[in-house]
Length: 557
Image 1 (tube, rainbow, N blue to C red):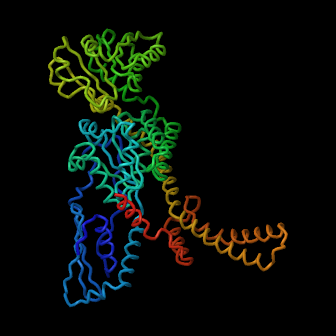
Image 2 (cartoon, rainbow, N blue to C red):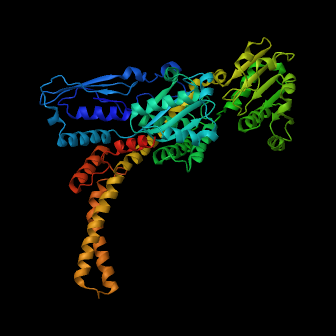
Image 3 (spheres, one colour):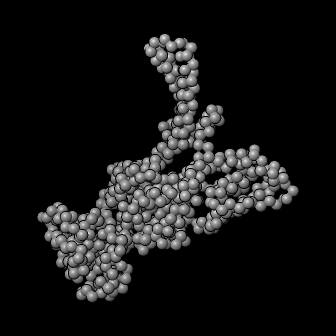
């Protein structure tokens, strides 16, 4: 029997395993062991193994002597079942009761695999800017990306965090392995980068580790410049853009909102933000490091782009004593606002984009920070400019083509070169990071407790609905026996009595379904209570829910 779809492969594997007497296969961990830190070198981050290497073969001996072999391939998605003994009555094995048993066991296996929060991404610590710029997704495209990700078979919720230093995707995956495979293939399709190359540079984090990583990101611990505040604003923007977007669901939304709270708390309660610099300020520091000290006061500065990053570059140039600069921007409105803000400190000259090359010819240092997805400066644009100059390009995708660096009189620096500025701070960065880790550990536990509490919500709803149906049926019988001329006051009293009895009876079971961190009850104890109530009242909560979700997704295509 050969089944071609990935869904059938999954269900077939689950069904065959249901017949196993003693499974010797190790269970996959639901949480990754990697934890990213700002100070980790790329070589310390182990990429997730190539899915093609994860092929496995499962064998089980049936009581009747039937030997089944399942070969599941991540590349073909096919499942094959072979019978080793031809004298077995296959009709008996295929009976209705056996099929029902298979269906139940497969569903049970899926419900045991809790949907996972997975972080899949590349950052300045793991991938070069040449790769990150191809993967970068503009903010305006985030809703489309979320929709496409959630249209994948095993992805239920999604969010995109794309900045100059990182491109990270957070998803709720119905299956860890298949979800990661689908998202990686989607990243390859949208960027044009081969899957193997993405796997070489990506990082994968699951559940608790994914949560902790995002909290570290929002706190500025994973930034190139420790404690920089811009990343927290970018995490807030993910929530703002995600509001109302189908696919930015309860788990992912809750994760990012909690990350914002953690980022604020870390900056309030620790000294991590004291003396912290941004990417823009590091860019200014790098420029001054490369310039002779005698040229600091006289160097001609050009800033291309007056957005958030450009505005910060101007601010830090002013703080370093720059008294005159040219700003090239699409419109004059933003430049006028910046000029007004610094009118007593610096002379700011506005030039339109059409004058960009002529302005570059007159500049010694050129900062670029626009949202353009194509380079603004190429080799042929710069080769005829007289004199020497250097570019500090803090845009991703880059505004200055790498080919410009081939020219003898030009040097080009990008965001990856900012590591030179922050390298001297390593000890101080580690010390400050330690101060924040305790807060992050505490907040991670709180978030996981909140997420664990969601597990029992369906049971709570179904138990209350079940009890309410009984109450209403018995109330109707009672009122019918009492006749039609019962006073409204009496009817209300009987109704209140039935509600009071119901609430008191449900109080105990509801308490034992709580798992929100407010008591010592563990998740496993709470889930045991949930399953017991499901059996006692035949609630069948969430039976085969993951199978149903996958089927619903595949049927839409």
